[in-house]
Image 1 (cartoon, rainbow, N blue to C red):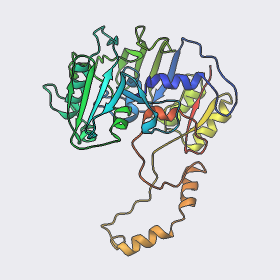
Image 2: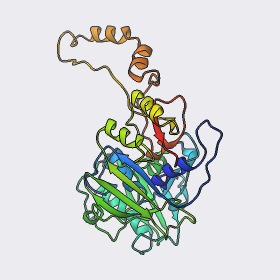
Image 3: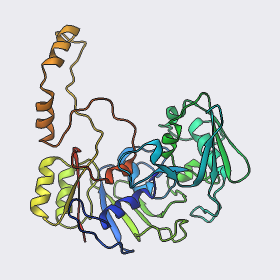
Image 4: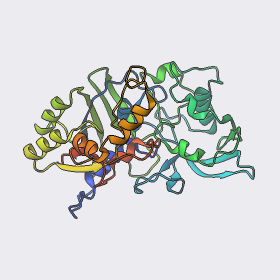
Length: 350
């Protein structure tokens, strides 16, 4: 999603239980979800792109494992199968072996096998003949020595030393599987995946459109016929379009409290859900310039700040004081309801 189907997760959130209302919407198949995205994606390569720009293409792929989308917090215990059916560690905790799902096909009809998994991590580790143009997540696999296969449906990750949380890395939204038979340069414009959606049309800086994969290996999925992602960089312009009924859902993490209040006043039927966010707000000083080059002064400054007031003013009553750096999460997590969290994602119900 990833926890997959990634883009389909948004549709499920839209069509099932309403937040706090006690009302349920019937899960009727069909229709096209219209959503805007503030970032224009440079390419359609999941392994080379970042953050919000990846949302339009996530639904075209699958992971080996994913986080259970019905569990609010990602943990080792919430990891469930995706392209893998089961997994186990060796006694030393250094080798993690996956049994793979059989009968899965790529969008072009080729069968999914263990070789695809090995080729994907050859790209991450830069150990194969094919290379990524950019490799933003190479450092995530610093502890991975190699990936080996045993037949078509078994693959083993060999770690340099034990890393019990390694499956969480594989369950993240960025750890999708690429096909071995399609070179990275083609994946940038014509991606082939195993996911619930296939590429329909792509125009840089304007839109990305995906359509339902009729041969998806999960029976009955996806519910939607397609998803249209329109690029609108300006949040205020995007909200005006949402208010006018041109979109069914807003982009994740792009709304301020005033914009949400405007949506509530203009579109009373819109559903506004609180959701977890991991963007921190900071007060930064230049420690190279006097008087902030004095560590005692910086400490005094830090101790004198009313952190709660700072958070309340910046977040207009919707933020929380952070205690530590945010852990790496999963994009699909944004669809969960959390009344105490500082982000809002309005949704229009057709």
